[in-house]
Image 1: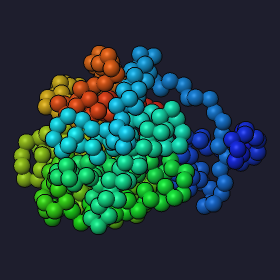
Image 2 (image 1 turned 180 degrees about the vertical axis):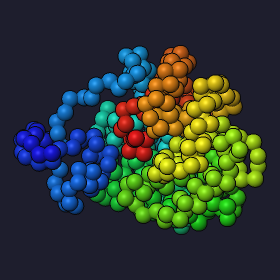
Image 3 (image 1 turned 120 degrees about the vertical axis):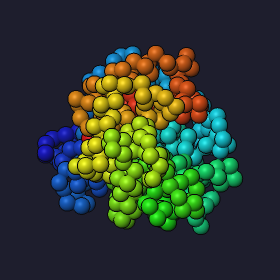
Image 4 (image 1 turned 90 degrees about the vertical axis):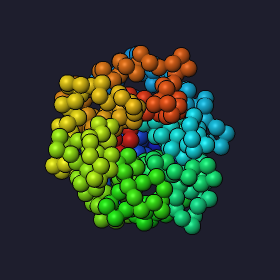
Length: 378
C-alpha cells in the first residue's frame, strides 16, 4: 500500500512522504530486508515506518494479565546480572546460557528490542552476554560457558533461538554481523553434533539423542533460517524424521527413539517445533496435535506433572499456532493459573529450576497473542 504517512528522518523528527508502510516494531522484528519482502517489494526498496498508536489489547488479555506481565518484566530487569546474564537455582552454575536466552526472549516478546522499548538496555546486555559466551568458544561454535555448563546443548539451542530473533531487530550493522558470525558457527556445531538417528543429547560429542534437546535445536535452527542465515535443510529434515520415529500408536512422542511410552510435554514440544519448521501439513504433527487437544480437553492436569512449565512453554505454542479454536479452549485456564500463582515479587517458580526459568516461560506464554517474536507468529 502507498499513502501519505508519517515516518522519521535521521534525527527522529516526524515527516511525511509516500511509500510502502510497515510498523517500526514489525520492521525491526523481521529485519528490514524481510519486511520489504513481506510487502512484495524488490530488494533495496526503502521502507516507511508508520507512526501508529499502540495496538489494542489482544483477545483474552485482561487488565489483570497486563499488570502481571509488567510485574514480571520488572522482576527480570531487577534480577539481571551486571554481565547481562541471568542465573537460576540448580546445576550448571545456574544455567546462565539457557536462562539468559529465555529471559531475553521473554523481554523481546513484550515488544522490547536491542534498540527500543522500556527494557531495550536489558535485551542488549543479554545479547552481548550470549555473544561473548559464544566468542569464548570460537573454535567449536558452542554457545555455553563450558567451565560450568558441561551439559550445554539445551542452552545452546535456546541461545540460537534468542540470537536468531534478535538478529533481525538489531540496527547496528557491526553488531548484526557479530551475531551472524556467532550463529553461523553455532549452526555448524549443531549440524556436526547430530546423532545417526537425527537427534541430539546433552553434549555436542555424545553421538546420542533424546526428545527435549532435539526440539530446542530444531527451533533454534528455524529461528536462524527465518533470519536469513543459511541452515542446511538436511539437518532439519533429519531432526523432523527423528520425531517421526519417536511417535507412538496414540500419536504422542516418546522420550527417545526406541524408548516406548508417550511423554506429554515432549509431544507438545513436537507440535510447536514442527510448526516452527514449516511442517504445518505434516501427518506426524497432526497426530501430535490431536493427542494434545484430546488431553487438554479430557485431562489437562496431565501436562502439570513433573515438568509443568516446560510443558506450558510448548503446549501454549502448539495451541496458539494451531488456531483460534484451540487457543480459546486452552488459554483462559492457563492465564488464570499464572495470575493466581505469580509471587509478590512478580516471578513464577518454575519446575524446581528457579524463578528466572518460571518467569521467562510465564511471560512467553502470556505474551504469545502480542505476536512480537516472528518464531511464534501464526
